Image 1 (cartoon, helix red, strand yellow):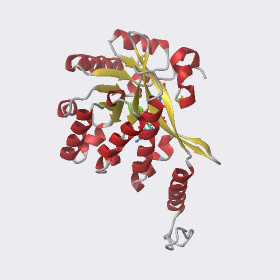
Image 2 (cartoon, rainbow, N blue to C red; image 1 turned 90 degrees about the horizontal axis):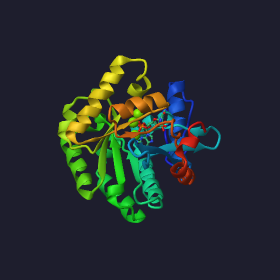
Image 3 (tube, rainbow, N blue to C red; image 1 turned 180 degrees about the horizontal axis):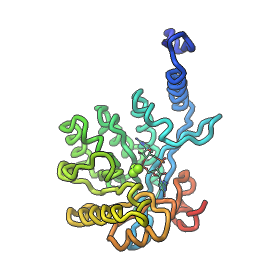
Length: 279
Ligand code: C2E
Ligand code: MG
Ligand code: MG
Ligand code: MG
């Protein structure tokens, strides 16, 4: 096994360590170095209100600007960051970036930040959020935290207490990727979510699958009855937008309007979002 020699260097390629484990170890070292070298960056994707067409928020989506490998998507490093615990530092970085950036946007534009289940196991989460808000001067009501149901599966007593504390601070809580995983309706009863984000997989199959349409109708109806905002992810064409509008979905997000872009492009996305759809 690769082992630290006590001075931060590692010995590789010892017998018994297979290629996958080596690749993993290299990626982990690379991740740690990248944090030091400031290679991470928050990208932003607009979320629009269906009725008014206005951009009401941006979701922060983490990107890794790797010097050799270029821009790396979260699927390629978040799982390992979660396994190694590095997600706590990365998550703090995203929170701070998002709050700092959003503090420069118009007051009626919010920012959404994804939280990993691992961050919920960390006792410093509340302090991190408090600090990110204080340092940036961003009003708590402009911060939305997105969690998936896997957060609620783990240690639910502590998790619920944390969620209620965040809510008491004025931060809003969204249930991300709704409809995937176990998606027990009891999650909606266990905590008063402010928003349900309908998973992209249902939106992409809207035109071709009757059951996706039925599920979207059910979730938007549920949102209406419970007083929870519904947002559809992954809206890529006008036909999908029209169907979502007809079902009373409140907000939409997707490549139809814009891909995630760096903070420097937020002003453009606010002005002429549709023109960026094919960029
Ligand atoms: P998510 O939170 O569900 O984010 C939405 C994902 O859908 C983003 O992928 C976004 O780029 C993509 N997307 C948006 N609109 C469209 C569309 O019209 N078509 C298609 N095909 N895709 C669309 P991304 O940026 O690769 O992020 C993937 C996932 O990684 C996120 O899913 C989230 O779970 C995780 N992630 C991203 N940033 C962070 C972060 O800062 N912290 C944590 N813990 N997780 C993050
Ligand atoms: Mg999300
Ligand atoms: Mg999502
Ligand atoms: Mg998703």
